[in-house]
Length: 70
Image (cartoon, rainbow, N blue to C red; front, side, top):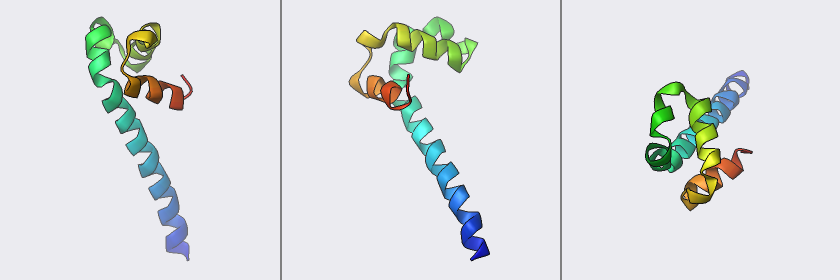
């Protein structure tokens, strides 16, 4: 039982990391297309840029932003 209680948080953390990675993959092309000058300035700068170009982003990237409350 103790082992199960240890494994469940690890599975949840892995699931969240996987969702974040899929979100990055969905927006990678859009980020390189619209936000190239911000790529070396950190995630917050790229996110702000993606939000500015929301209407021009792919459906997958738009959905990812919406899913993550952006």
